[in-house]
Amino acid sequence: MYKATATCIGLSAVKLLKRDKDAVMMVFPSDHYIEGEKLFADTLEQALEIAEKKRGLVTIGIEPTRPETGYGYIEMGARVNTGMATYKVERFTEKPNLEVAKDFLLKGTYLWNSGMFIWRADVLLREMEKYLPKLYKNLMEIYQHVGLEDEESVIREQYQIIDGISVDFGVMQKTRKGYVIKCEFEWDDIGTFEALSRFLTHFRGNKISGRTYLEDSENCMIFAGEKLVIGFGIKELVIVEAGDVILVMDRAKDQEIKHLVNDMREDPEVKDYI
Image (cartoon, rainbow, N blue to C red; front, side, top):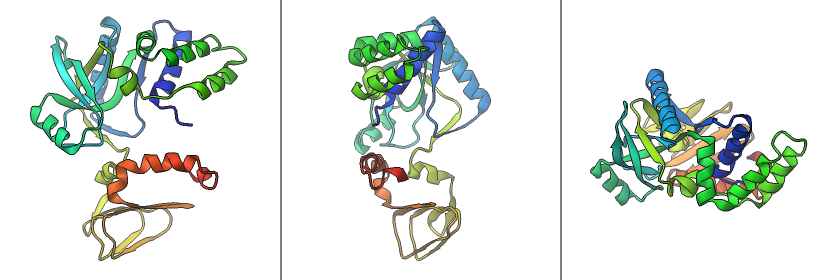
């Protein structure tokens, strides 16, 4: 069962803290595209400095280029007197509707939330104690058993009773220790088919990868694997061929597919295909 990001990040924090009382964590999503290695490394250096010296919970913000409704937004507060453009976090806003996203873009004081975080493990856990006391109690129970023979069984036991929540909702939207660095490197979130399609080949008004043949088709995204995917007279579809699974989806449902995947995990007939 999915327990959201505060759970797995909190578990990592207690394990790190058991090894090193001064441990600093860096949290990165696995589905991002980053270009500009030197700028990225410099940004992380500054984030580490803020995490250590100011005991801040640091995130990296991306300057918006469009009114994106699939990302969270961070409003920049007062600027911090450091090298790169760094600000206190005024507020987090999760995935606004289109009109609100357009308003954020016009204001110019909002950044996309990249989902990258840098903080000391002990500082994060203190904020969890303040804002997520039940989860904190679960994590402290695990902490007592880290390195012991029953560590894994205690983790499984506590996992079952944890009420999952994202670290954005649970901590970052409430903390007064939030900082955001406005990044200068190139970034893209490729966690959706729409985002991933920006890296595909353009073919007759569609975007494709792999062995694909399209005729009389418009504005489709085709992700072919070993098999040849043929499209004839289709519009606004996402088709993904992945061996023993084929996904055919309305392109407009891109942001909703995670709900479908969660439902499938609960279905014994199809869960093994996820």
